[in-house]
Image (cartoon, rainbow, N blue to C red):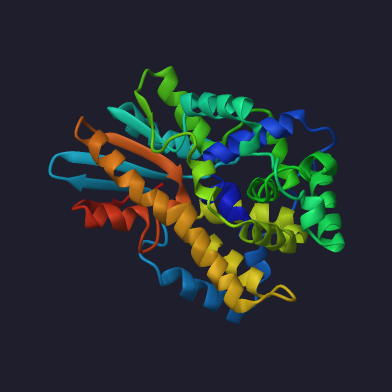
Length: 342
């Protein structure tokens, strides 16, 4: 499963990051700094051309700030990065006037959704913990389990505890490099958190794009073997965790909302022992479940809010591009789109 997609641009769902943050607060052990290299800097020319071609093949592949207008309705769409980075300060300075002028601020999940999520987990731990099937220690091969155990130790989590988690949740934890967990444990929620804080401080109505239980509904029907495949794909990229974190952040601040998805696909396909057809199928399924299906449900929410005045909608940047991305769906709903400088 493409790691940085889930961790930050897409399938770093804010609700998942909130769960991971809570786990990180209880974790013991040191965390490393993200001192990796940008993988794009040393990429072979042929690989770079293939990557750019794949990126350019989808609608609206670049840009994290857009204005959508329809009649007298105005919606500013902000693609966010869910992890902490000092460069967010410049972004906040750019979008603060838009937030101040908005009647409604839409985010993936706000404080109310976080509270409801934690309450659900407290009432029903089986949402995250597997209570009626084999543990991960039993479901994975010995070499796979050893890789997973080491990856979880690096994140300060005891393997015996992780073994009881549902596979989809473990893949979410793997999506967050160990060097990113400190910021989450300290409550630093990236640009999303900054937008939420600004809205609350300034009395702006804050509304979630989706319900707090979205993440559970996304995975409840996914077969166990598909969930285990997500873990295996994430483990294949684990040696590049720090480099991935650096590359992902740099790509985001360069406005490359689609490129990181294509890079993840490219790297996963080139890992030893990977089945090309299976990888492509997995990527298509992840795009459908984590992006397309959610994007479609967000459009009516955005449209309804826009009837009451200007809207700022802030969500993971990977939801913007693509044939079924938010930008194309807004276009199909009759909005005129304009890319704005970030």
